[in-house]
Length: 398
Ligand SMILES: Cc1cc2nc3c(=O)[nH]c(=O)nc-3n(C[C@H](O)[C@H](O)[C@H](O)COP(=O)(O)OP(=O)(O)OC[C@H]3O[C@@H](n4cnc5c(N)ncnc54)[C@H](O)[C@@H]3O)c2cc1C
Image 1 (spheres, rainbow, N blue to C red):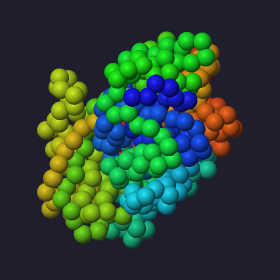
Image 2 (image 1 turned 90 degrees about the horizontal axis):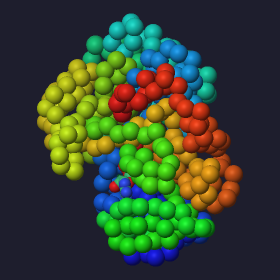
Image 3 (image 1 turned 180 degrees about the vertical axis):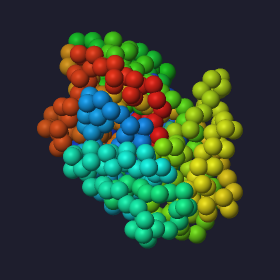
């Protein structure tokens, strides 16, 4: 076990592994600890969708504060796709990146109106998105059933295989000199003079800098040094079918129902979209709910009839991190020198970019995108009740 390091990263998901990758490559000494194996929590259990469009439950917000909050991270998501594209060339294996664009579909006139409004909000922030219907939609996506009357289309959206990508980041980091300590839990953290002392399940570590990259458990880690991080967690459900011939090159979401759908490189249909799992199972993982299997697959086959012919292969669950205002929390923590937070919203999509930006601040450089709006400082004045109601009480449609 390590005794000393310059940077200690707490959490070995996509965020922690990407931080190690971007720090070690620039010669920074970095160690990552995770209480489980790497990539076993949200980063290895997510749907692998690369999202840019405002998520459907956030597209419905009406008040000015909440609208601004949904628009704020949009440039992050656009740039995040470029970072995944670059990683698909840099990493040592095929991470199954593709960006053929994504549809958010509507079945009713009211959903169409919300999509129009959502696209206008996206375009205000420079995101290319528009509503398509009729012959144009039929030509672009002939696999949809007649239930779909229109959709918003965003050309940047796509997918990456989460089982492959984060381990590839970890290998890249390790080759550059990063060290990984699996099954090593952080139990206490204290700042003593110029260094942090971390009590772990495998001994004490002294670190000059510490990064909280513990996803859905970041609030507990931050609380060890008295820092309040407004991040919650929800247990979500996922399905995967047997393989089919290539049919759906796009990412599919629904404006009014919980659905994400994509076809993996091996032909399997990956179906999710924010259906709940039972968090009170008592075991380490939330339990699958039969209602989530049935409801989720019904919607998928309702929109893409081919799905009804495929057998379900596997279901699984995972804990997603939900940040109270839907934006990432990135960068140094004022008042706690040496402490950094790296917590993403829509976190598989934006994890590597967020890690890249935080790594730049750790190296003492100006981040290549403005991260001031994503500083933890924004919570100093409190979070407006509108934002709380909009984001905190809902599980996202990822
Ligand atoms: C079912 C599901 C579907 C999703 N779909 C998508 C999607 O399609 N697209 C998208 O962009 N996002 C999606 N997400 C969200 C995304 O997966 C997460 O936001 C992202 O993976 C978070 O990455 P992370 O590295 O911050 O957290 P995690 O991957 O959860 O990693 C945090 C790590 O910290 C470790 N840890 C916690 N406490 C401690 C401690 N005290 N000591 C040591 N280690 C500790 C944990 O063991 C864990 O490995 C989905 C999430 C879920 C659950």
